[in-house]
Length: 336
Image (cartoon, rainbow, N blue to C red; front, side, top):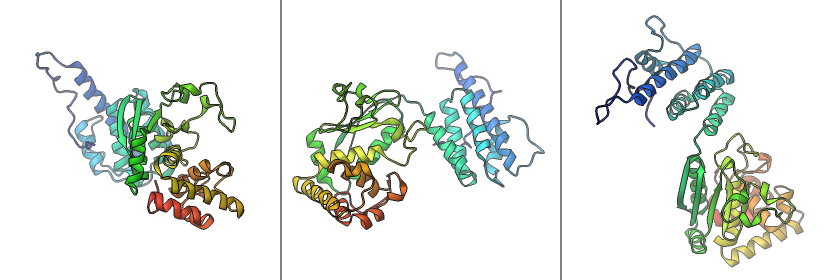
């Protein structure tokens, strides 16, 4: 990403000239908007920064770039001040330039933001990311299909599938041979609007949940994961702690990735845990072997709710038989 120190064209300079000799008013307006936005951000930051005001010229791009580069925040940017930044961005419909500058400020002054303020800004940036990416990518042996979603959702789907299969190339090969497809469900669409899941309209799952309202599911041929969960948007009902991507892709690995012997071993571990009266991650995991493996995978990678029943150490302590299998399938424990 370009640094805020890169020199933007001054509003007082003549507009750019196109190859046909005509002025580009759009570029001139863009530069003017960027200068004004930088000024607004610097005005907010100056409340908590040690800056020399003697030579400051309001909205001077040169001064803004210079002082932002020199600024050292004395205190912490509060949630209220972070929201002021958000207001400046939202006022102008959040152009790519504005999002870029706000992201640069967050990166530059990361240690100076209060944790709640930083989290607030990060989520705002995710929420305002344009949902305009479509295409097909391949990772972890599966084809990832996206249409009208955020780039961050595509990136996260690629990351999770890659991480969850990197210890076992044979699992990725089996998934590839099966032709499995991971579909990213756009934030504004239903699961049953998506190819591969339209036949489920009006139907309910085994436990009585309507498929129309579900935000993640896995079949033998397709896995669906919600954009808002992958991108950790404010509309995600899990608040970023629980990963439906990890959970649903675990189902694909269970049914299409591992071999018959490992599937039998997973079944035996589930039955043994029930027989000994062992602790499950939650009631959902106790229902059947599929949810047992899916929820344990979330816990193994530290992406389960509640967090008190998450993490590889929790799995190792409470279900050592399953822990050995998860380590065999996913490799050493790590946070995803």
